[in-house]
Structures are given as C-alpha cells and as structure tokens.
Image 1 (tube, rainbow, N blue to C red):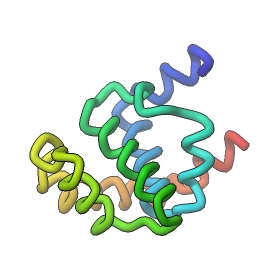
Image 2 (image 1 turned 90 degrees about the vertical axis):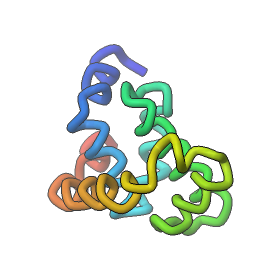
Image 3 (image 1 turned 120 degrees about the vertical axis):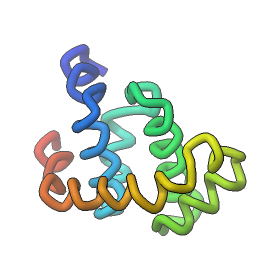
Amino acid sequence: MLESQVDIVSRPEAEAAVLGCMIVDTACIGRAAELVSADDFFCRNNQIIFEGIIEVHLAGGAFDLVLLRDWLQTKGELGDVGASIISKRLLNLCRIARTLSTMLILFA
C-alpha cells in the first residue's frame, strides 16, 4: 500500500467509512480487500471487524450484521470487540457510509 493511502485509512473517519461501505454495499467488500488489509486499520476493533467482514463474505458470499456477530462469537472476539459495537457502532458506520458509499468506487 502507498504511504499516502495508509495515512488516509488510519484516520478514524476513514476507517468508519470503509467499514460502513462494506456493510451497506457488499459489492464494496472485494474492492476494499484489494485496497487495504486489516493491518492498515489503526483501531484493533476495526481490524477485527474488517477481518470478520472479509471472512464471512468469502465463506458464503452473503454478509449481514447477524453473520458478523456469529463470526465474532465463533472466533472468541465478540467480548473483545463488544456486543455494543455490533448494535451501536456498526449501525452508526452504516449511517456514515450511506453518504460515503461511492468512496471505494472513486479509487477504481
């Protein structure tokens, strides 16, 4: 990844936008996986969520917050990330992403 891309992704708003785009529009999951990796996220919880989104999507092609919660629980990460993140934070990420849903498309 280019240094300028790392600077962009490591900002909290950018991390939220990337995750939110992936959650709102599953077509963004593959593109996001091409551009960034979990290690590009500064926040450990966001790294875990990113990994979960990718793994859930790759496992069955489908994705939703219930499947992500189940993945987190199976991996023993639900306690680390916190159930409230799934119910509150990710829903806020989705709200943010609705206005930024074209972000990943712009990098195409």
